[in-house]
View 1 (tube, protein in one colour):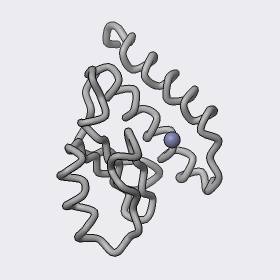
View 2 (cartoon, rainbow, N blue to C red; view 1 turned 90 degrees about the vertical axis):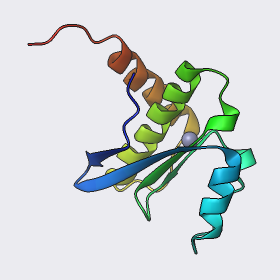
View 3 (cartoon, rainbow, N blue to C red; view 1 turned 30 degrees about the vertical axis):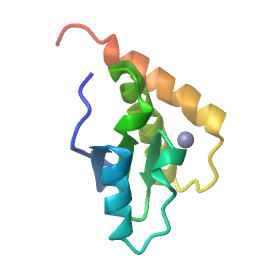
View 4 (cartoon, rainbow, N blue to C red; view 1 turned 90 degrees about the horizontal axis):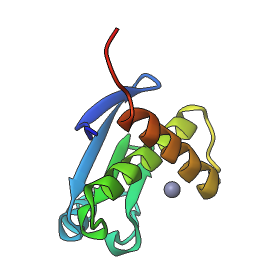
Length: 109
Ligand SMILES: [Zn+2]
């Protein structure tokens, strides 16, 4: 599946950054947000700046990276609905559904 550089979600433009842990660390050092150490996450959804970060170093396969992107999309959707508390299991299940729907689509109307 295609991992976009940006997309519109709930009237906001979300940016997607696929970076190594080192690149993430450098980027996070330039922000005033208190973001976690890149070694501790696969992906991160930051609603304050409408950014999704994917840690390349934590993914051995492209499919895993895509799954993480869908997981972070699910977080973005929840934030869009005004939900601040996210159940990680529910988010991951929703991410899995999004990934399946996205990767099994066929044909064009
Ligand atoms: Zn999550």
